[in-house]
Image (cartoon, rainbow, N blue to C red):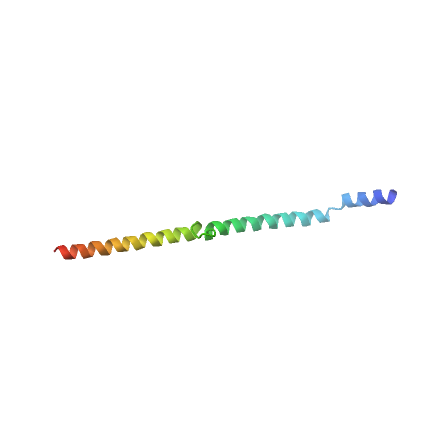
Length: 80
């Protein structure tokens, strides 16, 4: 019984494993944050979120503006 108690006491006093667990925890938190950050920037599975969605929306708006400008320029030339 004395050996078991001594081994258990030694286990409780040993702090070397605690540093490893702290580093693993910090790395896991960093990984989760990086994945969340990249998901927000790159967008989700549908491609309509984050920066991808923004670029797609701006591209659509610019295409519509180009169509409107071309139509108004052509319409102004026909009326003269």
